[in-house]
Amino acid sequence: MEIIFIVLIFLALYFLPFSIANFRHHRDTLAIFLCNLFLGWTFLGWVGCLIWAVINFEERKTITETRPRKNSSIAEEIEKLHKLKLTGVLSAEEYEVQKNNLLKN
Image (cartoon, rainbow, N blue to C red; front, side, top):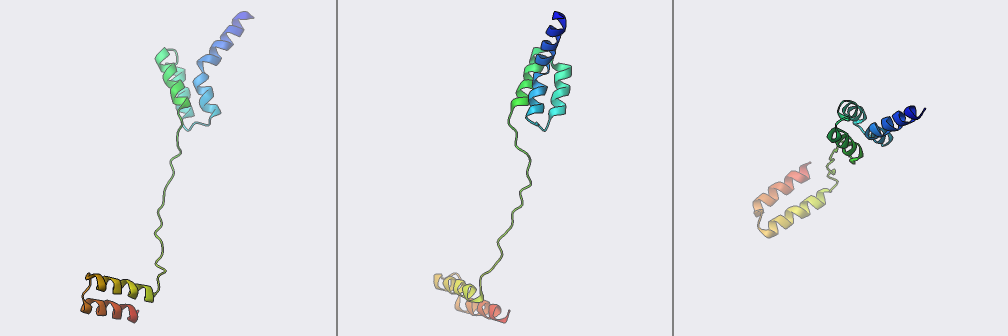
């Protein structure tokens, strides 16, 4: 009876990294179990599995960047062109061409 109790305690400690990973719903639980099963008998393998099991991980998320729509009115666009003309970025002719293009659309 004592032997069974000792074996159960040993197995519980042996598979502690797997138990932690399973409890935390780690994404690599199966890999941790296999590593623990085959390399857990070495102290280094067991400690490695334990560290792997407790490391916080972030789910990979797909980040999509949406660009804001151009909701500016024609008047706002002409105002921007006028500011560019005043600062010297656009000449008077370029300003008139761009303004006429905006008014045509």
